[in-house]
Amino acid sequence: MAAYIITNTEVFDNDAYGEYGKLAPDAIRKYGGEFLTRGGAAEVLEGSWTAHRVVVVRFDSVEQAKTMYNSPEYQAAKAKREGAADFNMMVVEGI
Image 1 (cartoon, rainbow, N blue to C red):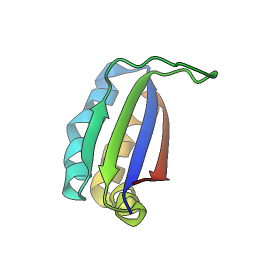
Image 2 (image 1 turned 45 degrees about the vertical axis):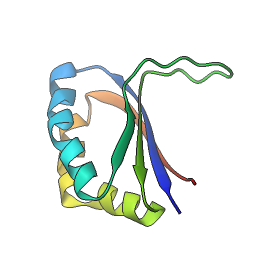
Image 3 (image 1 turned 30 degrees about the horizontal axis):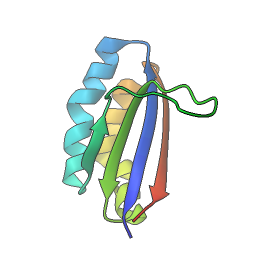
């Protein structure tokens, strides 16, 4: 069953976040991730969610998404963005 990683990020330090942006896409693709949206315009239609930089990545399974997240490549990218953004991530089973 497909899975989707969804992130909502408010960036505070563009330089540091840019270092994350140089590494993360290769790690995501290496583990089978496909970007569906990557920071395009977002508008909340209902509720109190504050949309910032929203990214959606499709994987073939939740296990594959978690493998990417826990990989040395992604963890190295994650270390570059720590402190540079308010970063929220979830994985959701999909169709």
